[in-house]
Length: 136
Length: 136
DNA sequence: TTTCTTTCCTATTTTCGTAATAGGATTTTA
DNA sequence: TAAAATCCTATTACGAAAATAGGAAAGAAA
Image: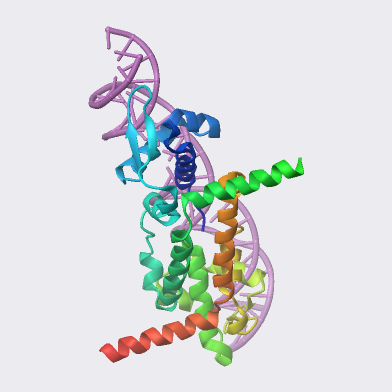
C-alpha cells in the first residue's frame, strides 16, 4: 500500500511541466536537479510519459516537454496506472473470501484517483505554500 | 498499490479461524495444507496475530487458535495495519504538491478498510459459493 | 514419565521487483 | 559543426518480502 518512486517522480515531473504551462519548455535536467532526483532515472520516466501521450517532447537546445492536454484533464488515475502497471492481483482475486473485498477496494481507489488531477496537485501546493508563508 | 502475501495469508487464516467459531480449534497445519501455504511461513503469521491480540492460542495436541473477539469487530484495517506496518510515506509526504493528495488517499483507504470486517469476508465467500453452486 | 503434537522463537537464505547507473544513439538548434 | 536535449537498452545495486530451517517451550494423552 504505497506508491513507488517511479510514480512519485512522474507526478513531480508532470506538476513541474504543468506549472510552466505554455510559457516555456521544461527539461529533465532542470527538474531532476531541483528535486534531487537522478537525471538518468528521470529521463526514463519522461520517456514513458511521452510514449503514453501524456506529454509532448522536443529534442535539442531549447528542447523539453510540455503537457499534451490540460492539467485539469490529466487524472492521477491514468498516471498511476501507467507507472505502477496493472495491479497484478492474480493471487488475491483467486481467494474467494477476498475477491469481492478487493474489487470494492479497487473501485474506491479508482474513484478517488480518477477524480484528482495534476491541476489539483498544483492548487494543493499553492495552499500549503500559503500556509507556510503565513506562519513565517 | 497491492497487498503483500503476508497480509493475504493473515486474512485467510483469520477467516478460517472465524469460520470454525467456538466449535473447535483451528491449527496452522490444517489451514496451510488446505490453502497451499508453507506451514512454517504461516506459523510466523499466526504468531504475529496472536501477539497483537487478534487471536488466542493453545499449544499441544488439540491446540490451535480461535478468535479473541467477534468476527464483526475485527476490521481489515487493523489486520492490514498490523501486517503491512505503518505506511512509510516519508518521501511522498515531503513533496509539497503531493502531501494533501496522499492524506486524502489514506483517509479514503482507511474508511473503507475500517468498515470491512472478517465477518464480511465470510459473507462474501458464501455469496460467491452460492453463485458457483447455481452455475453448476 | 514419556511421547507426540502444537505453538513459539530466531536466524538464514532465496527471490524478485524497484531504483539507479551507464553508455551511447538520435534529433534539433544556433 | 558543436552542443544540448530526448531517446534507447543493458546492466548493476539494493532492499524488502517470501520462504526455509532448526530447534525451544508448552501441553495433552498414553
